[in-house]
Length: 205
Ligand code: SF4
Image: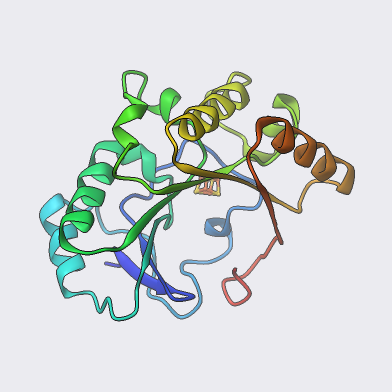
């Protein structure tokens, strides 16, 4: 079961296969892993004990950054994510990034986002589209139209907390829409990264 894996010099952390979305570009639709790593489909959601054991034995030579990402939305297990981040911080100098759809407040309504402070160094949030209608077509969240605004609110909070915050879009939307996303990102003061769509795990970046 792959909980930790290496990709481009970073350590990735795969704690859940759960996700409330069904993005049109999701790699999970086309492959079982990233590059030559083992399958990222988990046999079960790992316990804290299993995560700690996997971290302890993982070869962390040269690793300075860890990314909660994997084959699912990491904030589905928000408590476990923070517990894991706490363990990593206590046992290394590795910086923590969370790649997320930004829908944590819809997944766990009562979750206090301020708990990210001091444990998460940066967040990369899937903006995916310039407005809620297109967002719903691209991301297909189970929460419906309100998702886009909640995601933007999450980004604003992370920025407010001093956590390094970035947006991403995948180039499955039009060039005009990407320009609109850029304008929205500029307005919010959050940098945008455009990712190329890949349909196989060999060209994944
Ligand atoms: S949020 Fe991530 S894991 Fe979920 S469907 Fe979209 S790309 Fe896949």
